[in-house]
Image 1 (cartoon, rainbow, N blue to C red):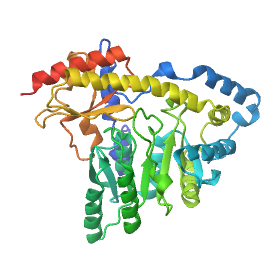
Image 2: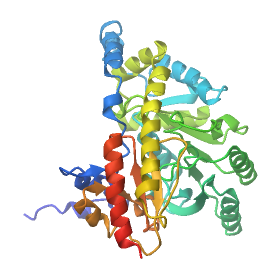
Image 3: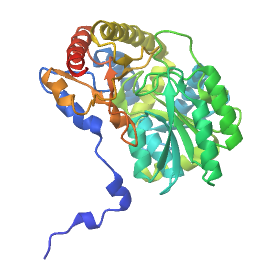
Image 4: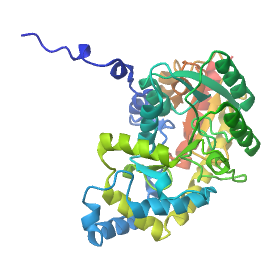
Length: 404
């Protein structure tokens, strides 16, 4: 009897699933002696382990019967009420727990949105560059992409309008525009308030759904806060995603979605079929963490540490990078974005970087069409300030040797 050939059984969707280049490069970057600027990882020394342990203890004693049982699919109701209250911090005041669904990280929410809205051949609009794992999810479900270029003020809305006019002329209605308007991953830029208002006006004109991802908005180190698109939304066309991964700990795998109730109801059905519910014990613990008002003091603590690391990296870039390499100085978030001359291929020189004891993420990973061969993403939240300075010096030496 022949050995079963599983390849013949896989669906077209399964065959579109690709390994993350970030995961592969991180494996190389974790070798001894290499300073990695590659991951999008929070600093584990900043995790609030003791306070979270206190809240887990309460979950497993006072609320054990609830915490260890199956839970409601949209999430633990007291937590959703707390998240509705938390939304006021973002200027979103018109939501109730019915507008909120707890997901196992915001990546699960991206997967649910892909399942709900994308069929083979549907058009999705992205910023260029954009979050790799969102691109992967949308591609898996058969999306075709249009991309909007960015500058220091975020997505260029005039370019989005040109794309929408072109699609409209062809009779194509894009499913949504996916955006990370605040401290964008990977570019680090923030969309101005003026552009946000213009984006919403154009979305209203073209009946465009906006999917707003906001993992980094609380990590602001300079400048004035800018309201999320969801807070400015008057027509209920923004689906808003948040996560505790960057402001508490990624290991708890908890995010949430804020959306109209008809969208939440559909996501609820998809989640039922996926995992029934997110782990209840962590939901109860996070609810206790919020009720004890531990979150914002912790956010201030990590902001102070990350702000210093960001400043160290920005200064190191000024000191060691060749002037031909353009690097943004973000007001917050976790990343710097570097753009070398076009003849520099950051994929090709990655092995040279490893040989010099430093790793980064190649920029092509963040473009659905393989552009960005001369770009790289640099993370400053994970390494120590001393390692940041040394890594940038090593990378600067390499770039100087390659630039002519």
